[in-house]
Picture 1 (cartoon, rainbow, N blue to C red):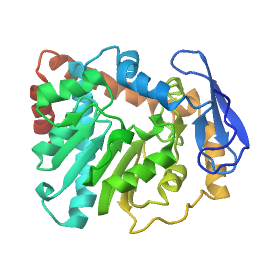
Picture 2: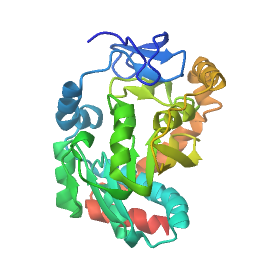
Picture 3: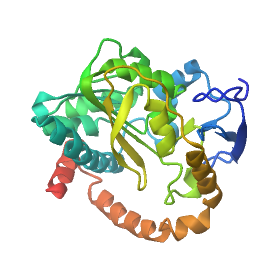
Picture 4: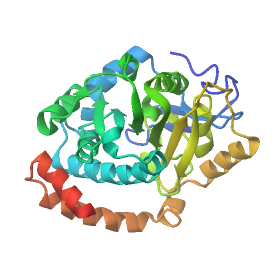
Length: 318
């Protein structure tokens, strides 16, 4: 593998390095920013074959320390899923003006199945795909949901009113190709809901930003640009993680690249990042307090079954 010859977004070849070590392991890792479009990306990008093997067998165990989700992972995933469903419902259900039971949904990178399970319990016709063997099997066994052990490029022939990708796009070797694939999966007038880490956010710990599992680091402008041929944004939330709900375009259009102002904003934000910003503007200290409260909830749920944890989260939201 060679270092990037061309930016995978705009196909230019001028980069500046923004990090040279994996924040988790300390091992060498080159992260560069395209000075033309502002996309931050790993260099080199691993091959598709290497990534397929990594995500089907190694990723969950390496970053979660387990081959199936533990109670604390289920609780965190279910709480996030409930919040995402509220955000999606406020946009999609409001615009479609239909009951969730009228909408089909495919969750890409479904993990342990908590989002699909909660979506189904709200009435959506929800299914998912997940490349990891242990997690996809866990979802089928514990929630009885339809989650296939597949990668995105193996999804051919499936269509849905809503497609969701939560912390998936940053792991894919070719986001542009992924968008073209998703355009074929999302039904006409349908919606694509993407959540990714926001490279411009202030509340990300410097010890948890750049690491080998993330191939791309998106800002609002670069994410919208990557999708622009195929989807138009209808709702954006960018405090903390970046969430964008897109609507499928009637026809494929031209790519719209970030402006020079957008690029300079990313340059400026990258220079501002560090422990001082995280602990002050990013409220890192208060995050530690909130994390302690969450740990107490997780401790109380340590002996609960996966479905009991799902029900606990549902009841806490009512």
